[in-house]
Length: 122
Image (cartoon, rainbow, N blue to C red; front, side, top):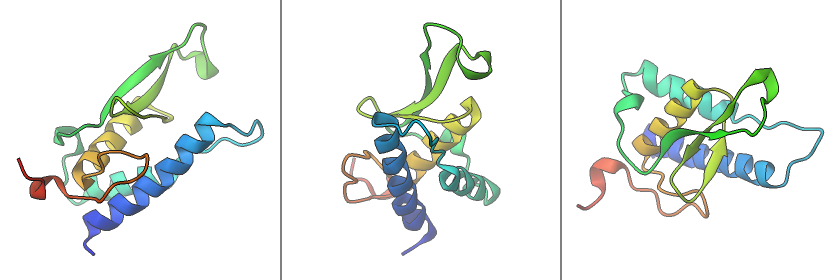
């Protein structure tokens, strides 16, 4: 298994946990997909341009009706139009969306057979 496949498997698993927690939050616990942030940083440090990755995932934000924590007016998210995952910063949203696109993760519910983008039939 190459590093892209490992990153895909780990990222999908961690983000599935994040989605589950965000849908049914435990009031005493906040879940941050820190491992995914580290995987994105590692990919970037190895020369992967996460900002340029094309695919179904994109960074976005969900507007809040009233200012939230740290006076934010919106929550940074990543989405593929089927699933939304909240992240802590807009920068992390860009990195995680790029990482998922680079890894070939198309969906998080459930994780399908992973195919790196360069091997997807057109």
